[in-house]
Amino acid sequence: MKDQTHTSFPAPFSLQGKKALITGAASGIGAAIAERFAAVGAKVFIADRDQEGAGAMCVKIGGEAIALPLDVTSENACADAARQIGPIDLLVNNAGIGAVGTILQTSGEEMDRMYAVNVRGVFNMTKAFLPGMIAQKSGNIINMASVGGVVGIRDRLAYCTTKFAVVGLTKSLALDHGGDGIRANCICPGRVETPFVQARLKEYPDPEQAYRDMSASQLFGRMIRPDEIAAAAHYLAAGESHMVTGTTFMVDCGWSAGK
Image (cartoon, rainbow, N blue to C red; front, side, top):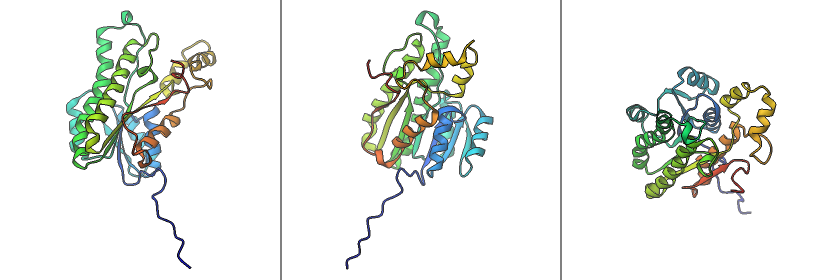
């Protein structure tokens, strides 16, 4: 009887042997992505200005996790990191900050700071690590945008401006370098229950009501967990999504569905 053995496939969604760098990975979404990538085989670099937090994440993850002190607003620091680490397979530009206010409530200094972190940070890191990806004819870049990069949000002028820019940067990057074997996508989360948001909730007289108010724009009536964003990043990072590039991956629990 003929042998009925099946073709061998790699483990589903494996990142075994991949080198991944995640910015802003000492806590929140970035930390959840780093944990998930490491769990499926990736060697992860925990890049963050918070050196203590990055070190703690490395201890928590174990294995080949490496802490990398890094300020993404510095083009020189990003270039130095690329020289130090060498070519990587996965770059997750997650580091970002927020701001509340209309245009009249936003100072020029605040706008510049938002741009420096949320846009220039993505630019600096991508420019630093892209040549190594081109040289190896493969690379995967995942940028963290926002539902506020697709639809407008009241009182978030500076934040939305920078996140719309991240969406545009991602699409242009995908078009410019698809022929080099590079994929580029962005994730657009709704409101995520990060440590920053949890701390903010405690400042309200009624934290439970504040939670409900913040969750009202999402159809399931709750905030998104960091690990749910990490699951989307895992899909985009894995080989199973190799035909996905130039997309805005909405993980907003329906926030943008009716816009």
